[in-house]
Length: 171
Length: 301
Image 1 (cartoon, each protein chain N blue to C red):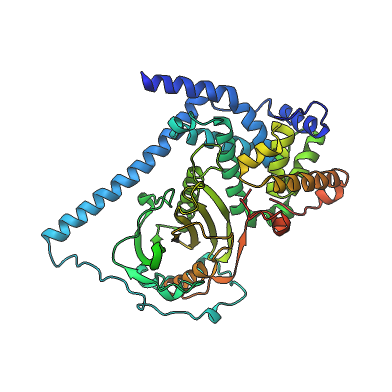
Image 2: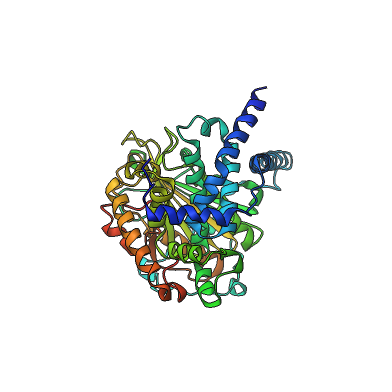
């Protein structure tokens, strides 16, 4: 009976939040396949620890944080592949159809991970600097700096398509 | 939450939603199944290890003489590369050049001389150091061979290294990933109340073929709570797991990279007769702006 309740509760949570997390992870990773995989894996881990996660103030923040960690871990492992990617071009499945979106996700991928995360949490999720500080464990001053630098870098990249097209700093 | 109504960047980011229209998510049952499979795999690994340990114990007891208990590994059993032996450039041997020497893993374990950075006196401990909260979990199903050593120093300082040989380089990569993932899941950045809190996490560069390091407090509210630093390094099919435990969170954000570098240099020299360590560097994923980030020590993301 208790297990059935847990299943019902988890399923409701999943159905209510999975598209939001997917959207946020897409903005953070710039890759639909990665976003799907990290989101699904994070929900799987949430189910493993559902008793704890369900009691958290914000289970969605837990899933988002874990999904981000999984993505960040993959980037670090894939670091060596980045050079090859720059040489051979981005794989087909990473290119979203809308050209404006291509420019935006490509620009996001060119700014440092921490800045990108802060940008998405603030400008997409709508979290305050204090809330981001709590979720990421970084001081508020650091979050402000990341937001400021991230916005400047994005603005520059979005008005300078050449630098994006020719590659540069990657996650 | 802030009001994003007139934020152009919000509008741009929100518009990415249209790219997801045709993206299918498998549903909650798939997430539950995947979670259950993860749990099953972890339990199976632990049970297999337990069964193997019991079997070895039984055979060892009934056929005395076939299985001799290994001698405790001391700090002087293997050569000690001097710090100056570490070159500044990491040679990158191709996979087919990774010739194993046939040495036992126990011969490649770190020694007390490899532990750097303080004036503590380290001695080999016959007893394993106490496990730390959210410490590295080992999926025993991936283990082909293993060896470990524990050191203690005054005032509750502890150091442990575990060397694990797997069936292949791929399995070693997966093992390192699994340990890292499990630890990262165990240590979220505090959206869950009461969870431990980390203050360093990132890549360990120029040490082995891949490396990862994290420091955390087992109780952020208590400065006297033990503060472990966990380092994972892989070279070829061998994974090295190192855990250094300090009795309090005295760590000021600086990281001891020399100890894992020394230990890894020894491992590669003994097991592969190669040099696999350059100038160790910590990569917190922040690029060049970490030092100017208002004292941020890096959270890896």
